[in-house]
Image (cartoon, chains in turn yellow, blue):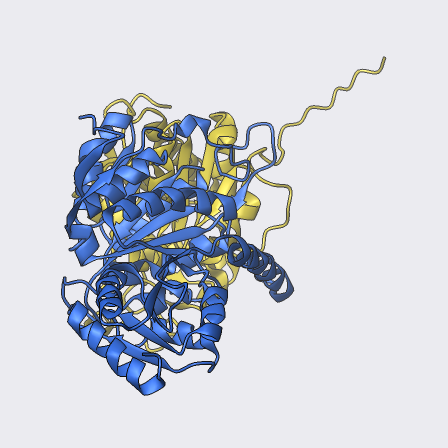
Length: 256
Length: 361
C-alpha cells in the first residue's frame, strides 16, 4: 500500500461553497467571507448556522456560505436575524452587511438590535461607498471624498457627516462585543479573524449583540488599483475610523 | 390563566385574534403599537410566556414584518398585527414574504384613512389587501370576519392556509370588530406546535443536507418569470379551493346586497327590514376577499334584478363585484368613509331606491 507524504496545509473552508464569487478584483469581500468561513469551521458552526445576506455587493452571499442562508430586504437583516434567533435560540445567527445597508437604510434595525442585546453577530463591511448601485455616497463616505452623488467631494454642510458605527453603538447597554478591524495586510487579517471569532464566541456564550466592522476596499468605485486601495484604507480611513476593540464583555477577555 | 373552553364567554375581538393564533400553534408574535389593534400585542405579551412563545415589541412596523420574515424562514408559525397605516409600512416585507414563499399571518384591524386618518372603523384598505399591496406580481389570501367568533375562527384557519400554500395570509377586521366584546366559544381542541408537519425548506441548520436558501432575488429574468409563474399556479389553486362566502335570504331574492365585515352586519339588519317591507332582498357576504366569490356573485346576477354594494370605503369592493356581474344587472353603491359606519336605515333607503329603479320590488 502506498503511503502519501502529501499534507494539505491550505484549502477552501468547508463553510464556503465551491463556487466562483462575483466580487471585483481587489475587493476585500472575498477575504472577509473566508475569515467568517474559517471561524465557522473552527467553531463547528456550519450545521446549525443561519446567515442573513444584505442588499448590496454581498447580496449573493447566500450562494457562497454553505450554511442555511436568508436574503433580507435592504437594511432589515438585523430584524430578520432577530426573528430567526428568537424562535430558534439554539441556532447560530449572523448577518453580513455593507455600510449603506447597515448604517443608512437599516440604522434603526441596527441600533435596536444592539440596544436589545439581541444575541446575534454582525459582520459589517465599511468601504465608504455604495458599490453595487454605482458608487454613490454612503453614510460612511469620508468628508471630501468623491462619489457619484458627491461629485465635488462630500461636503458635510450639504451632505452631512459620516457615521462611526462602533462608537455610536458603544453608547448602548446591549452590545457584548464591538470591534473595528481591517484586512490590508497579513497582520491585520489575523486581527480581523480574531475579532470575528470573539464576536461569534459572544453569541455562543449568550452574552448578547456582537458586531465587527471591517474597513474594506472598493477599487472599482474608488477608481484605484487594488494595492493603492489597500493603502488608501491605511492613509485615509484608519485615521477617521480608528481600529480597536470598543467593547469586550466579561467572559470574552480570556478568549485567544 | 386558563381561558374557559367549550362554553359561551364574552371576548373582545382583538383578544380573540390573539387567542386564535395561540390555539393554532403560533408561538411567535412581532408587532408595534397602533390603535385600534393594541389589545392584540397586549394579549400576546401577557399570554405567550404561558406557552413558552415569543412576544417581541419591535422598533417599527418595518422591523416587525422582517422579524416575521426571519421566524417564518426558520419554520415557525408566526404572526403580526397592525392597523391601516402600519400595514402600509409592512407592505415591503409582505412582498418579500410572498416571493420567498414564506407562510405567516398578518392581521389588519382597519381604521379610517387615508394618511393618518383616524381610529374609527373603515374598510378602505380593500384594494391594498386584495390586489397585492406591495410591489410585484403577487397576491395574498385575504379573509374578512364579521363577528368576534369569526375573527377567532378565520385567524386560526389562516395559519393552515398559510402553510398549505406557503404564502402570507391577511385577516381583516376593523375598529368595530377589534374593539367590541361579543359572546363566543373557544373550541376545546388546540394545536400542539410539535404536531405540525415539518417544513423541510426552512433555514434551521444544514445538518445532513445541502444548505437551504430563502430568497426573492432572481437576477436572471427567465428564472424570475419561472418562479413567478410557479407561484401564480398556486394562486389558481387558492382560487379553486379557498373561496368562502355566506348568504342570507338568497333563495328567492330579487335584489342582493354584497357586503363584508361590519358593513355586512349593518346590511343584514337592512335586508331583514326590507323583507318586512315586502322587498325580496338578500345578502351575499364574501368571507374570502381574495380569492373573491366571483362565480357566486355572477350566478346570482343571473337571477336577481339588481345588486347593491355596501362598503366602508368609497367604491373599492364594488369594482370586484362589477367585474363579477359583467354588466348583467345594475350595481349600486353605498359607501361611507372617514370612519363613519352607515346605519341600517341608510342601507334600507338605498335598497328601496334601487328596487324601485330596477323593478326589483
